[in-house]
Length: 315
Image (cartoon, rainbow, N blue to C red):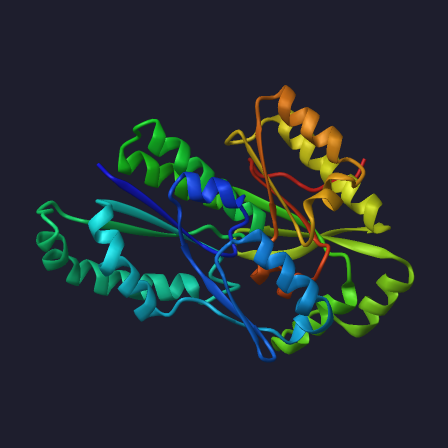
């Protein structure tokens, strides 16, 4: 059986991994003033757009995910021919309409695919499963990586579905934003008043950074740590401790809102990489998607993994 894997462009994975494993992207278009870029996970294009537009006016950006009709057309023109079963894994539905768009499109796809497949010489049925990863950015990559591994190992579709949905329910993303004023400006642009001016001003004045946790469709602060580099080091240390305790899949995903060399120079990075290597956990590093950067700002750091329930702690 030919199994296809689809993600949206907010899913932070290395560009070469996406290409080598034929992962199909649902691009999200970003507009800042007159500048427009469809996010196809091209790291060079993302960094160029970042330096030219995001740092100054990114909080004003408009992001447009693939519509119901665009998703339907992509599947009927290509995916129902190339694959027999497709898993479409999206950013949490609480943060983007792309999951709902994919769900609505799936009804039309499953209703209309037969003549398309028959014309291509395929008489077998086609199946599609849309999975809400319940998280975002680097943490989205966990389910996609496991889908690639399971497909390569010849897992059957029911086993894959069960495992991927289980991982989605147990995927965790932790993020340290660099610029709280940007985060507040972006939140206000989107009509989210949860980031108060007083808390932002206080946090910036004292150089306090929140640790934000994305899990089960929710994004909320779980700690406040003084200093950006110190906060990142504590987050990396915590992730390393979770690796030692045992993950649900041998995967850690990292993403950064800028050049990866900057992330690799942050304190705690080398220790986390060493721990992962010693525990046979594969690390995937990528420049944060353009969609992610316009929402959380330049220089944010994210780590994602799948693990049993736990509480973030600073040691």
